[in-house]
Length: 366
Ligand code: GLN
Picture 1 (cartoon, rainbow, N blue to C red):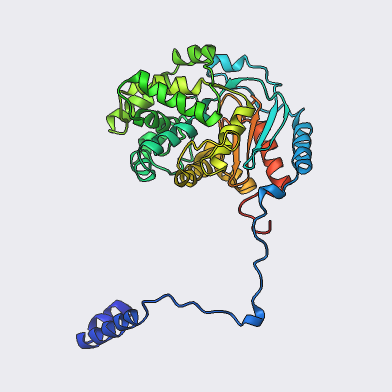
Picture 2 (tube, protein in one colour):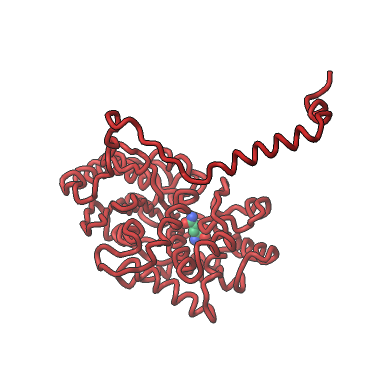
């Protein structure tokens, strides 16, 4: 009948005391790390050591790109974003794939010179900017690094998740990240964000004025998110000013080539492998890649990671950026999106290339 707690409670205190002395004595006995070697006759070499990128031949990469291009070229699923009117007008057939390796090789196929608005992929570079100005710990504290499991523009996430901003890639956290850029005014905030993106790309990017005008007059949901963050004390400059700068950063034009170059900086510990210029501290790159893995493809991030093992980021302009750390970066442009707001062919092509080249970083066999 009696529960065990009752039994223990009736044990004389002296027994419990002796027992606790014995337990703590055991804890004191072993303070060194003990390393036990296996029987040397049985020690094996690890199955593999990661193959360096220099050993991945041009021919193999070219073939993977060609196949990824032809395999999905006629896939017409998905649809252009239309909540930003200018995006609905972009030619849905455009399709370009670019790869930049950390040893500085470039491979491209399709519409790789077509410009499109970077949209949410800009959030990766603003995150890099605030991390450079502050630290990974401050980003974690002031923005957050967890997944919402909800849509990228979710107000429900702001209302229900105690961190409010949650992570730098959902709109709420991204606007807060823009607001966290240390600047004296809006113009300087924009200049810093834009110069940072240019540095990643290794060239001066231009602004898609049509997309900007189309979004800045119509971004009421983002304005609402920023004002709600203000009420929670989770935005760090004037909310509407930050929202306008954020909208501008999303309207910067890139090509799939630019995306691959920008991503190659993250694949290459912060150094642009084409220009040789260090853009961010090497120590910051794993943190940025971790957020990309957690939240880069929003509420589809789990499925993406399951299929490729790579950090990635999408934008509603149709861009996808996927990174294989230490090896290469893939930029794809194809405007039609799935229900999560991620480019359909972008995901298919990038996943195909990663798996075809055996580049899943979680697979220890290559
Ligand atoms: N500018 C877009 C927005 O704020 C970016 C969204 C995205 O690319 N996922 O809605």
